[in-house]
Length: 445
Image 1 (spheres, rainbow, N blue to C red):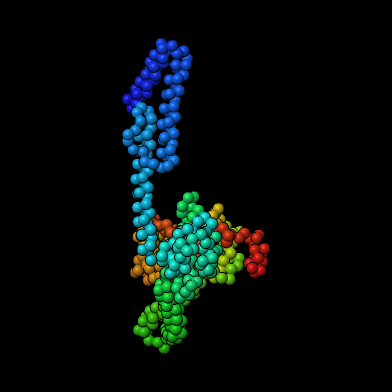
Image 2: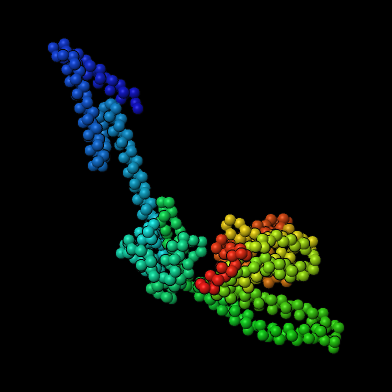
């Protein structure tokens, strides 16, 4: 507050006091004179207050000349606030316009939903992919406009970690990947993003069919070759000079057979989105059987320690879970030197059951971890082939865990070993004493 404004108000009060004195000298009683001057002073304040309220109510722009004194300071402050508000409003309008221009140019469908899942806004691409026309469909439920199977359940579930892949309701030839992201006030609104994945979907289908058919067709001739090689290698009539080449041929034939079996397993897993044939699985028993096989493979070269909650079981597909456990444990033996220690852990946590395999081997460099679950990806190609690995084990593990809504995390430092952790959801947890009731419920369901 400026000193001249305060000084002006003091000057007005002093002038009013002097005027009251003059009126008293003119014969008017002092009380009446002071009341008259004070009334005039208050009327001035009431007028300036009414004028300011009218300006604000009518959204008029406050511009000079401003009143003198404290009211002038108040008028100037309100004027500056109005100016800042106008600038902010213009900036927000420009940003909103740029955002809509950018959103309209995006080839993906964008739909903004209210907390009650009603359409608030959509870009032009939403009309082609989702059949949502804005503003014609504004205020309608998205599930009333888009009748894709599973979309309503996907929105209600609230778990948007994975996209929903569905065929477009208005055009079954279009395959879409639908993602949902909470945003807005208290994350109550939803942004639905629909992407056309038709080409990628068909390419994946072609790839899966090719791998499955090629692997199936290769299995029969490979079995015949393996049989003849085995007979020749074990025959007493085979010359000694031919035994070493035949032994190498037999090893490579077995390796090819393993690759084909893994490819068929992976193709079968890719054809399904979720695990089928769910049943109570005795995970501690499966782990013990796998570890027994791993110890045979290791021939006593590795120290394998078990830490198992023997009362903790899991609801899932027994063969798929056995495959995932086997791949992780066998990998820990194959890819670590003799004398290494492997620790296998199965226990319960508040978030759900956890299966963990840790070793003290050479570890994995950080740049390899994001890609290590890709098919045929190898950190050390020479060492992986020498150990008999196919490069498909971790890809199978990833797909099995996806089928069971589980997550795989990998922690490793070069020279410090590697830890693979599988975290299963709480819903799949099963205690041994609960096995019979839940098994009955699964069969009845």
